[in-house]
Figure 1 (cartoon, rainbow, N blue to C red):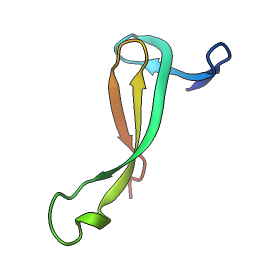
Figure 2: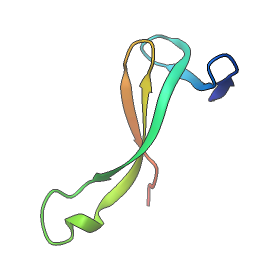
Figure 3: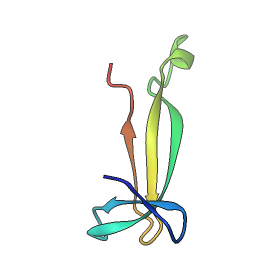
Length: 66
């Protein structure tokens, strides 16, 4: 579970590489899942992207699993 860190005003989340709660930079990105065709522009899905401030490990998770 993400918590706020009062010292740096950031979000701490568990990091699989560091094996501890660390600060993460979190953003939402639209990623095109279909690479070709006329409907490629409509195949964008939101992903939650986070990067560990300590080790740089980056991962993403699809937000819309329809």
